[in-house]
Image (cartoon, rainbow, N blue to C red; front, side, top):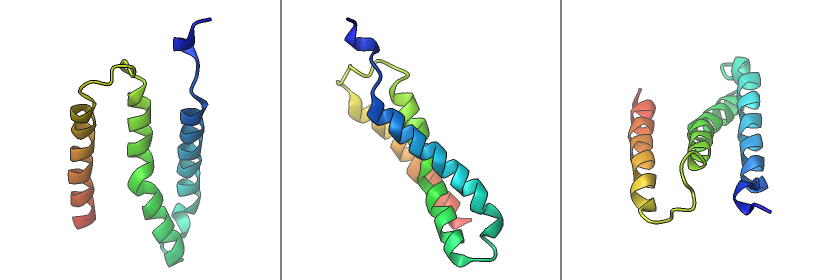
Length: 91
């Protein structure tokens, strides 16, 4: 039995949750100008769901078993994310 090709259901469930958040975000989008609570929820969802989905998907793109130099890989994603979120909030 080849253990390298087994699925990690934890990450599958996280991706399902993030896709569900996309659907919820699209459903409540017409209501954000009417209800302030929906506006807050909308911006909360869109602040993290797509970057986290890209990060989780990218985690499996390369060899995930190679644990050396993991900090530079994370910082290459996290630092631009913080910079763009800062500019997004300033607009």
